[in-house]
Image 1: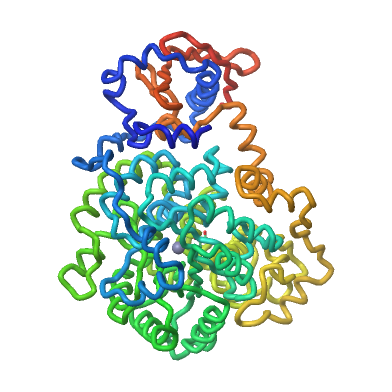
Image 2: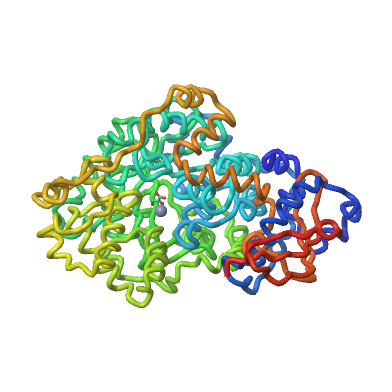
Length: 622
Ligand code: 3PY
Ligand code: ZN
């Protein structure tokens, strides 16, 4: 229902639902939406208002007001990379990318940027309000990375949103641009490998719903773990398999004996033979320094005919230099984010890149003015998500020691605070470094980064000495993820298994079960495209969160319709809150008063729905 409403509702797409909206549309005041839907939304709002799970609303700018002026949304979006892909097909599209003079640009604002800065909390509504502008103002983008990674899990688990509805709505709103997702090989968008059929059905459904470019990686650079996903993408016949080598350490370091240039070239060779259309360098922690970027990009482009796409995180602050070195060496495409959603654990800023290359041979096709004009919106949006900020206020060079990937670094800082170690983050960093060494120097990215992080947090919480743990693992509890890793669940690590540590650690332990085999019914559901398959995938990938999501939708309705400020912080007395729930149907929601808690801790929240009083009973958890 949400999707249908969104697709039909131009005003919602334009996000024109804030101040002045009602004055301009007096007819809405007499529209009576089904009370049921309104009451359900009020239930959510009343609960948030009473319990304030994220505290009080921060001082806000209305993002809607910050959208660029002078863009005519009645004009269709210009054709772009997506039409090129449809016209040329995947193979020729890749050749075309390789032959371009200017560097091509992927915008990660809708996925990795908020995953790395705001705990992946960006809501669909904030994406849809700007998506039509992105499509019209920056139609020269190579792609918009907007799905996959942690966004799927977080949508279901924390946002009460269906990830498939988000994808379909983004597809509708950016018809000219290739939409890109991050796919964790056989782990798809989860943390452990699923049966092959889940991966192939997932890819088919994602392609059907709107993904054009699949960036596929395996945390241990094990190509066999990526093969089913690569084959599933190739089978679609219309979408791109962009296959990543996960970069770690420093290949320019003469003392590096594992992650050398030779290692990456051998890996790339396997990736190319497995059927990749594009090679990606995935520098998840921002460790790729400019000289190494030059060496790697030059070698990859000399050795293979595929175009090369570079992804990095600006954790230490120097990655614009890395992008420029790679561009100088001929890299075909790079990833950046809108400036207010960039830097530190996120990608480097789009405007800085576009400006740096302007008037040079490799200039992007993007209009610097347009890129800058999109920034105020994102600045306003970011403010609304203040409680999810990672607390990393500046770049950190310490990443060269601990090698924590961008998304995880922001997460671990939050976890450290929860453990009462907020002021002792250096302890966690040091333990992470030690845990990585004990586990055999892994490329660290979901889910191998989770294995290292789980061990580090566990050892810190136990007050363990890492040297003693390395010597006598049998004396310690070990997190399930570490046992699963040692049991080979995630594939084989590049440097081989750390022995005798692994055998000692596994001895006498119960191995936690991996995913069950598919039932016949589920297997049949995965064969048919459409909503049933989406719901089945949600359930197979994230059983608990999917169930909670279904229950929340039943209780609260489509909370994705609410503005973020209302969704996170609730109702404010004396203010009119508008929720557009369908074509020409708006609800006006308000707060009159909150009653005292009774002996069972229940409060009556006097809400209004289209001007009529609606008392809602809410449990006060304080
Ligand atoms: C993910 O797997 O979500 C990542 O962003 C890895 O970098
Ligand atoms: Zn990333």
